[in-house]
Amino acid sequence: MKNQINIKDVVKYVVNADERSTLLGIGPMSENFLRASLESSKEKDYPLMYIASRNQVDSYEFGGGYVFNADQKVFKEHIEAICKEIDYDNVYFLCRDHGGPWQRDKERNDHLPEEEAMELAKKSYKADILNGFDLLHIDPTKDPEVMLKVVDIDVVFRRTIELIEYCEQVRAEYGIEKEIAYEVGTEETAGGLTSMDRYEGFIKRIKEYADTHENFPMPVFIVGQTGTLTRLTKNVGHFNYENSAELSRIAKKYGVGLKEHNGDYLSEAKLLAHLPLGITAMNVAPAFGTIETMALLELLDVEDKFAELGKIKDLSNLREVITHASIYSMKWKKWLTDEVDMSNLEALDDATKLQITELCGHYTFSTPEVEAEINKLMDNLKTININGQRYIIDKLKEEMDKHVRCFNMQGLTSKIKKAIS
Image 1: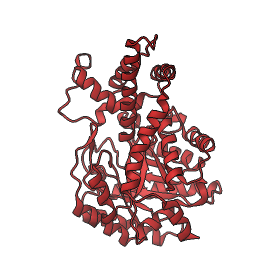
Image 2 (image 1 turned 30 degrees about the horizontal axis):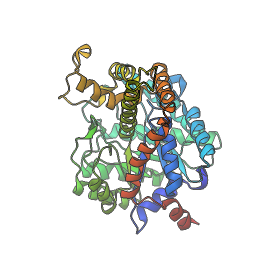
Image 3 (image 1 turned 60 degrees about the vertical axis):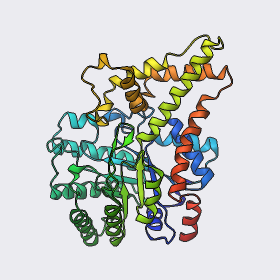
């Protein structure tokens, strides 16, 4: 199942195949989404890449993650349990998205010094490795002392090398035979890879290091800026076709794949363009959380209507609880534009409250208050013969299927197995 194919073989196939496909990295936003994506992968025969950020899934030493309060072990076990339940027979990969120093909000807010932040990053990576992660994104660019300025490329290179070498030392120390794949670079403007020359220069420098250091693996993905930018519940960036084609050409020249981040909320026309442009993989995360939250709100409308009809006696309080939790989670800070006035949280109008809930609801799913109200909603819906969880899962699968269709992923696992057999 999971380990039948190495992720390096998958990326190599997609980079070099005559028939174009684009891989999809998905944020593990909830248990419902894990189930939806595994069902979709099984039905349409393509490999999954779960891209967990450190805020989503991390060691309990650092506070765990907001995705069902999971550390790496619990995260892996949740997926394995669903696989067993649905008799999953395809391939999935556990991937660390934006691993590295200062990648947890608290570390950045505390302005930890570099040495301490790097040590915490290494501890997190070690837990990833010991729990079977397949791909590690090495991103040392969230330096709180630099903020919006560009991190010096020499510093990015030095930290990247140090972290990959540490991860390989852990693999050797624990006798882990499976190769680990690496992703380097970032879509953030502070990451330093903001021009074609700097992008190629960074790849070339990494390759030269790998060629001259026997136990240093060449990364499989280099993150490039295609112009995408996620804000609110839409993509406010300007997808650049010419830059994307050039980034892809440069990456392929060095035998690696171009990885695009912030692919949420793109039109199908832009998704379809990924194939001829040669974009190897794209990440999507918050969009799936928004879809699940909106599905919950639709179910609340159903609950309200049947309460009016006298069919439901004890309404859930989910709408109020998830709205309050979303607003006071403060997670909206990352995603808002200047057009949204959040200066007085007590005086927000209904439209803004709804916008923040759709944007940030998924951050609250595993909090005890929200989880209890979701369960109550589901129980109420069962009394009127509606399977609320199934409705949510199918809505998520619809979004997955759109990407599968546009990225030519259906049947991809079988094609890769045939090519490497």
